[in-house]
Length: 423
Ligand SMILES: *[C@@H]1O[C@H](CO)[C@@H](O)[C@H](O)[C@H]1NC(C)=O
Ligand SMILES: *[C@@H]1O[C@H](CO)[C@@H](O)[C@H](O)[C@H]1NC(C)=O
Ligand SMILES: *[C@@H]1O[C@H](CO)[C@@H](O)[C@H](O)[C@H]1NC(C)=O
Image 1 (tube, helix red, strand yellow):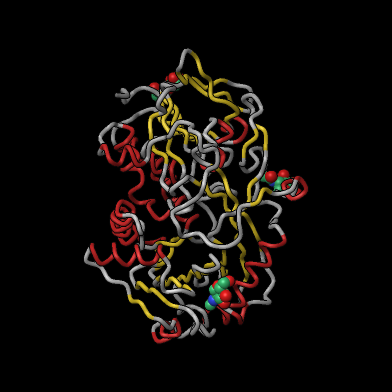
Image 2: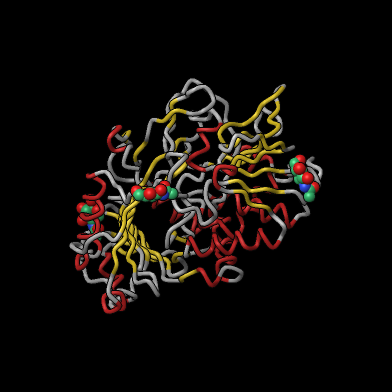
C-alpha cells in the first residue's frame, strides 16, 4: 500500500490523469503532483475540444455498466457540461456483429434500443435531419448525447486544485524519461533538466505514453481526423434538433452545433494515422504525437482524411458539405488490442502504475473513471477487472490491433515525414 503522505507524480492532465488525481486526493492522498506540457484543458490532448459522445451502448458488459454509472454523473455533478441530445447509430447492414451484441446486452440488462430498418424514421423525433437516410438501419437511444470536453476537464482540474493537487507545466512539466534504479521507478527527468523524485509514478500520458515506456505491443497511438465548421446563428438554430449520429459503415460521426459558439463538429472513428518518432530513452521508434509542440496548432489533416470528412458530411448533413473548415485536427487515440484500458501496477517495475489506453472511448466515463482507477491502484478492484485492464507483457504477437469492433473506414497508415512535419 502507498502511504498517503508519500509523493505521487501523475504524468498527464487528461481524463485519466485528472480523474485519478481527484479521486486519490479525495481518498486522503496528500502529496499529488500532475505534470503535463500544457495546463488542462491540454490543447492537443485527447480530452479536449468542444464535444465527446456520451453513449450507453456497449457490446461489453463492464463498459455497459460503467456507462450507466457515468450517465448518472453527467446528469448530476457534471450536468452543466452534458447535452442530452439523443444518440443514433446508422448502419448499411442490419447484421453488423457489433450492433447485434449491443442489442443483446442492452436487452439482457433490461434496457431497450429503438431499431428501425429505415433510418428516415429518426426524422419524426429529430426534424432538423434533412438528408435521405432510407438506405440505412438506425439504432436509436434518446438516453445519450454529448459532453463539452474542454469545459468538463476544466471543471475537473479545478476540483483537483481545491483538493490540494499541484500542477507543473511547461518544460518542468514535460517528462523526458522515467528514472529507474534497481528495478524501481524513483522519479522523472523533465525537459528543464531537473530530476523530480517521487514514491509512485502514475503514467497517464495517453498517446504519449509510449515515448516514456516501451509498451508499443500493448498500446499504440493513432490520430483520428476531426473537422470544425463555424455556422451562423440561423444555420445553428436550424440544426439543433438532431441527435449525435455515427455512420458505422464509414465511421463518420457528427454532433449538434455547440450552443453559444455555433460550431459544428464532424469526426471519424477509424483506424487512424500513425507517426514514427524517436523516444528519449534509447531511441525506440514509436507512434506518438510530438512532445515539444502543440500538435493541433497547424490545423493539419492528411488530404484523404479531409476528403473523407467532407464526404461524410455530404451524406449525413448535406446542407453543410461545402462550408469551409474553421479548424482541423487529429485526435490522438491510445489504441489497445481489444479496446480495453490499461490500469495496472507495472508487473515488473516497482513504483510505476499505468492509467492509459483509452482506445477512443474513455472520455464518457469521466465522472466515474477515477474511482475505478483508484480501486485498481489500492488493490481493491475485483480480480476480473484487474485481469481485464492488466498491462500485458510482450508476446509473439507484435502488432497491436485495434479496438472493440466499432471501427470503420480505411486501414491504419503511418504518415509520411512531410505530413508529420505539419503536426
Ligand atoms: C511532496 O513530495 C516532494 C517530493 O518528495 C517533497 O519535496 C515535498 O516536500 C512533499 N510535500 C509535502 C507537502 O509533503
Ligand atoms: C503555434 O504555431 C505558431 C506559429 O506557427 C508558433 O509561433 C507557436 O509557438 C506554436 N505554439 C505551440 C504551442 O506550439
Ligand atoms: C454511410 O457510409 C456509407 C459508406 O461510406 C455511405 O455509403 C452512406 O452514404 C453513408 N450514409 C450516411 C447517411 O452518412
